[in-house]
Amino acid sequence: MRARIILFLVGVICAIVPALPHARLGAPAAAEVQGRGGAAPVAELPPHGYVITKPVKGSEYPADYTFVLTRDEIYVPIAVRKPKGNGPFPAITMGSGEGKGGMPQVERQVERLASMQDQMIARGYVVAFHNYRNEIPYLYEQLQGPARNVGDTISGGQRTLKSDPTLDHEDLIAVIKYLQTLPYVDKDAVGAMGVSHSGEMILKAAAEYTFAAGVPIEGAAHEFLNVNTGPTAPHKDNEIEYNDVNVARKNADKSKAMPRIQRINTPMLHIGRDTDHQQGIFKLVHEWMKEAGKDSTWVSFDHPVHGYPFIYRQADGSYKPDPIQQKAFETFMAFFDTRLKHTHTTTAHQ
Image (cartoon, rainbow, N blue to C red; front, side, top):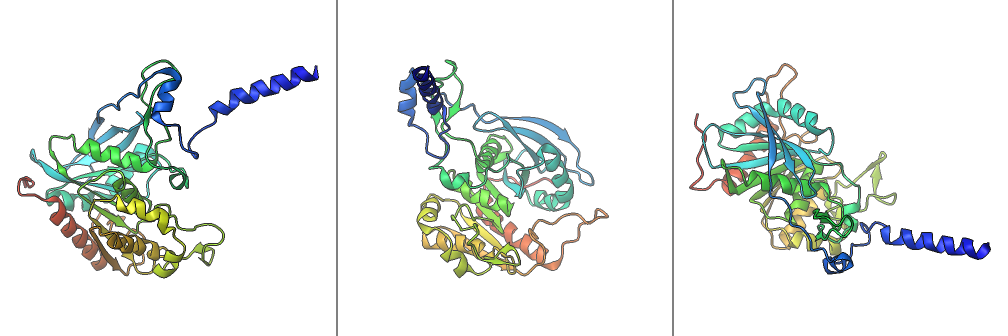
């Protein structure tokens, strides 16, 4: 009886061990996976989206609320708004934090940012506010790189399977690739701007896919730089304190951050906020990009509101940027004008 129990337990363990997830340890190579059942990896489907067009309150420019295919064949919500005319126009993606709320979040943000987006559209830009899947905290730091396509040795079919989970910054890449398929978008002139977590998404995406320009606004790049955010991190009033770039530098892992930075070929404008508790992290990304010989620019303003360059409508629906917000707006739009506008790009028809 005892021998039977032991044999049973050994069988259970042998059955479980091959099924353990590979996300944190690195999945087997594609050749190894293919050898298990002889199935070759299946190519990804081409980028596409499903569109629902709606008017935007108080604006002449409607929004194409779109579900965009991602690399693991789920869909993320975005809203695309464009100038009048056929283009091709440069395009700018926008995000503020995100990874929550689905399409209703996109609709809320478009209504709040409509007046600011109208200013960008009037300058000849397509704008695309995006959302993406929820973050898996710290998984980015543990994976060895983007997921690979692997053969379908499980079902015997022809599914597009991945060696690791798809992360939120890969959804931003999917959105950029989708915009590059649109006939009215200049595929060589797609830029991205994002606040906080969405700023870090730009850096992570650029380390894997090159696009025309990026503007991380108070980019919370603690994962990208492997910054210590644990119990031994410096704190002030129960909040992690990295306002000083030298403190951030001492608590970041340069040996892991620099290989990621070396892969970036996208010009970046980093926008900081003088008093932000993560200001040192924002600035450190710029300093290490410059050290790596990358095209990087740094500006910072003194403003009381996190994410101040995103100018939301007032409660009464009016558009009233304060002087610092207006200066920040003109700064990043001048950057985009330089990086995204080409001689063959058609401007908006007024």
